[in-house]
Length: 223
Image (cartoon, rainbow, N blue to C red; front, top):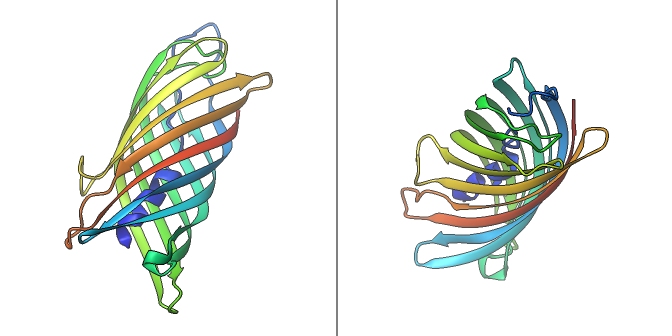
């Protein structure tokens, strides 16, 4: 079931930075946020496909140590479950991700002005405790390194569109996640955001892989 852990990592990835343009307003230095996600998908094991679904809650934040380099930290937890065809296999998980990214050009997320792009590195560590109806128990852990790229476009009036891509370093391009989202800034630097992600994991040595999609909603405070 380790291929499912790669899906959980998608819930842990710190939000892609909104990066430069409206130089008449100071760009933000950092943020703190909470995000909620609901996800589902199929795990392909041998010739059979098993469906699953789950939820997650993630607390995170990021900080620009200068105008272009950002560091991020996120801590998340949640659960996912398979149906009766797979013995009602269910897992509780928690994990942490740390990221470093470079933003040569940044969108002003508060005003929603300008285009931006970034690229970065993310390390994610996840642990799951699982059991099924037959009293089978398994503890799964994973330490994964990923590369990410993102583009942002300000739509004005505090609205920003983002698109991102990330992939496991060890299975680059075979393991992939695509993300799209919108954010809306409100008075007092409060930002509401929503997004979707989808992708698939690389096949393991036994030929197993998984496909997934998730929807997330969150609130962030920028400073």
